[in-house]
Length: 130
Image (cartoon, rainbow, N blue to C red):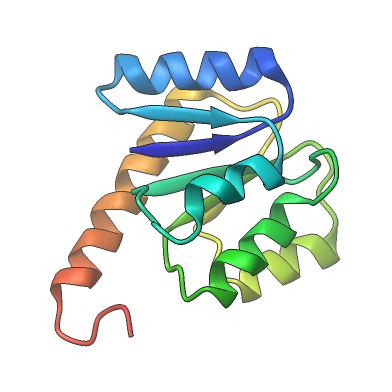
C-alpha cells in the first residue's frame, strides 16, 4: 500500500487513481500532521510519496519524524521547489528518490514499484535493513 501526502487535492487524487489502476492500495492525506496519524506507530505502508511543500509541517520534516521513529519505509519526495539544502537533508534521511513537478505518472509508478522491490529484497537479506 502507498501513502500519498500531497496538499494539491487534484494531484493527490490523480496519483491515487493511477496507483489503484496499477494494482496498489492508495491512501491520501493532505498534510503531514494527518499523515502522521497513519504512520505512527503502525508503519503499515510499503512506500510513502511526500510533497515537500505542505501546509504546516514539510514533507522533509515528516520524513525526519519517520526516521526518528526507526521507520525505514521507503519515501519518494515530490516538489516543484527543490533547493540544494532540501535535497541534501532528504538524502541524509535516505529518501529513495526525487520527482520534480510536473512529472510523468508512469515514471513515478515504475520507480515506486522498483523502490518497493529493492526494499523487500533488502529486508529479506539478514542484516539488510539494520
